[in-house]
Length: 342
Image (tube, rainbow, N blue to C red; front, side, top):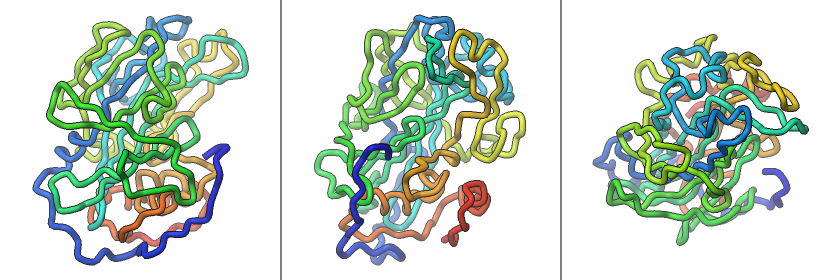
């Protein structure tokens, strides 16, 4: 976390390990759990500039929106493939908490001026929600950590028992009713162009923008100022899905890093175009924080115990975590010793 105070983590009575007297198993599926807590998402849109494609460069969409799995032609095809709203999720479980990661993809991270900012092909940012398992179907939302470029920002909803830990809490996570279901959802927002993601209203819509609502259908915005668009949630761990493609050299340049090049005009009229610059959740990293690259998604129990002071026991033993198969490789790429896999 850039520019924020770091205080010693002192959590009296917090146990990191096995969780005694675990709540009863919820009656809902992981898909239902992800849909219930998925954010209402405010996306700022800029329709000006040579690389805006009339605003479509700021629409969230599928990583294979153009019908193929080639990450190096996504800049070139922005606006020509499907702009149907899609987001991705994963659910990781311990006996004490659910950890829900949400991933929003844009084909371009772009700028509209020539001064000192680099744009690049593909853009992936998102958030982690921690939900305490209290025996109810959907649990209790305790915190969010969002990804804005190379920094993480932490939030707690009103009434949360979690407070600042090694990292200071950056603000309150607001909740909002959806017109498409009966739940109150956390509210997030992304800026135009660079698509940093924070809790609303730390980012907000300025002028044109799209309000996306979680759903099981993917709607295409009518224009860049559409305030009711449903996005489809897709499981990262689905058969043939994003996690299954992690070794596809056409889509990924390395584990957790999307492949991207300078074709299609990326960097023209701007400072420069970076290559292989976007990350999937298992590649997210705030380099000056303790958790290692990818641990926001792959070891979220460790991350939340670093970020927050938590007055209940937090299990570090995963009962469901498909990311575990790559933890040693993620650690190697980060040049740190691999941690034991629970």
